[in-house]
Length: 199
Image 1: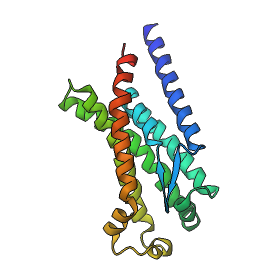
Image 2: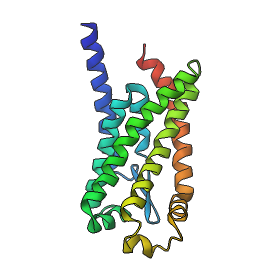
Image 3: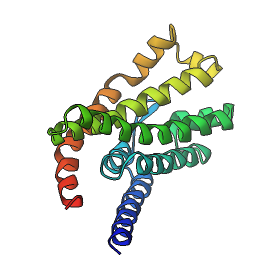
Image 4: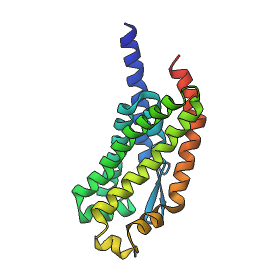
């Protein structure tokens, strides 16, 4: 009976975070255009789920984020991904969905790894987990972008000197802003939330 109650509560929490991902995906809060890329705040509910509910939940939430990103690309709503979709739809699916699913799963694993190193430092662990989501999202997305599309006319038209210069130039302030926000939310929101959920 107690186990069923815990499972129901866990599923409810996952459903609420999933609803938040979907709502953010279709409002300006989810994707903020910044030049050719889009500043994504969707890593925040993904990291919260990965920290509070574990890597599996992080993967589900990351996968939902990835699917909304891919649908956005399909309907022409994503600046860069919409163009990439016209070049190679399958590679764009892996870029949008695969990177985000892996990000959610790895975020949960990073949180657990930091907790093993500093078990008494809950806020530090949460900050690390919150930071991991945007860093992993950027690293995986840009890595797959270079792997699949670096030699495309579109990317070459952006004038990259080499793949590293391309990644650094594209990420810039956006990557730093996403990382700082993820870390801040991880420390300020997720640590107290964990105390409530684990009661």
